[in-house]
Length: 259
Image (cartoon, rainbow, N blue to C red; front, side):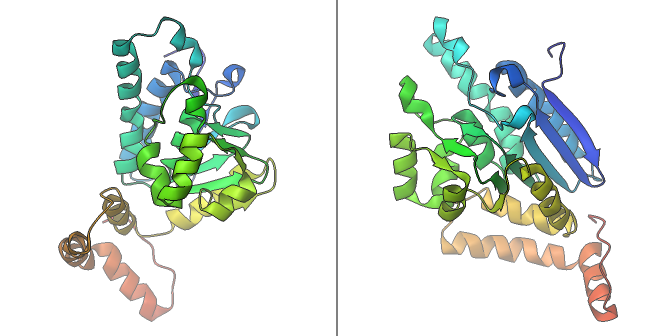
């Protein structure tokens, strides 16, 4: 870990906020930042009091991408290790139980774009900029984009963004499905925190099961039915489901405890 924290972690009730703080490099995902994301995400995942995770960037930028300074003495082995290492935090994001929201201001380029697309929900400032700029430096997309982006916007539009390094703003991102909510400039985190409370108020086991199912996509119909058949009976017998039924008939707000 660097002397200066590169991922600042704060708690607001049931929400854990992870702020990438590498402003000098526009929050580039350096090896140090990637290494710091892993324990920050894992700690939030393992804390049952955390019901939603929000990822944002300091200084008005989400993340301008990977650390291009590493490319000067690149070898195939070193490149493979760099790509392999970022799987650690991406796996935690995509296969974890806790819903994750990306609050995007400024640039979400390259690996930063991949980080945003690994979130379950994206709040974008209207003037944010998204781009998979890999081919401008002779590379193919990584950061899970080959899997996450087509699921959000379809194969044809994903090809355009990934092959042509198309730059879009937040308003276009919302239209395409890259962003789920829009915010005025500088207000993405505020809107993300409001959305996080909606996620945090849902039944945690149900949310985790839904997220786990989506992580297996693409699914054929029979595979989807199998997940429903296996998971739904177990959820029906949880304390949260019983609490939801009680609250429904009592016309009260349920108090979910993740049990």
